[in-house]
Image (cartoon, rainbow, N blue to C red):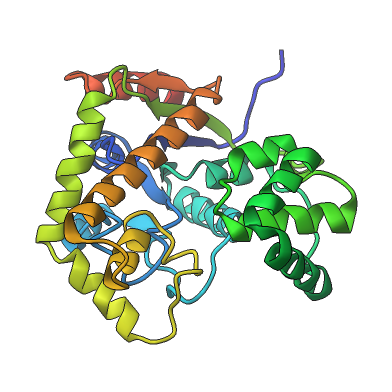
Length: 313
């Protein structure tokens, strides 16, 4: 049997508020690791409180690559992440350490390890036609059309997610193939690292849900509302940007638009975060080659350290 001589890397994955960052920092005390963030919101500068971004003291002691690398006005894609993460992993290896990629953005992990399909560029004419059709039949009707053409994509995309509905229908119009088929991964891509996957999966979600609520209340106390006000005052940020659509930011932005009263804003934000955690858990369960760890167990660090010790040899 041939020996796998690829360099080693560790993926530490888990739902929001499951304690990934704390565990990653603790593990870096035990092993020679270089931490790399895998989070679609932490890439943005100025989104600190609502993303539970590690504070300056934590980042000084436990540096993370790929945090604060984009302005909120600049979109950042899975393809961008794949390029940046591969470069960061090489930097960590050059420094004589093992990359530990920590976060909850499943699409980023998947794009990095499996590659991305070559989706067509946006087509202004097709998009204009789809917008005209949506004006007539509504985005609910457009979502129903997507369900007929690409049931898998329609199941993932919510009926009110107009941007993703439009993109999915655009891809079908341009290629004749469902988006879900084309997102299966890049053909011929071979990931040049041997990976240990660790997934934080709680057996009981009740503690996770309680922690999500406590964390949001702490965000309010630490100035989430002022943080979003400052983003709005820039004048160049809108709700349709990926950064502002991040969980917690979207609800706070809408609250400042007067769409909710304070209690409703809190409830919607916590509910949206729980829904995010649910989606992340569903994705993690599809990662059949991951070693699962219960974040609620007292021996979490010992368990994770034992698995990593065996992996590193």
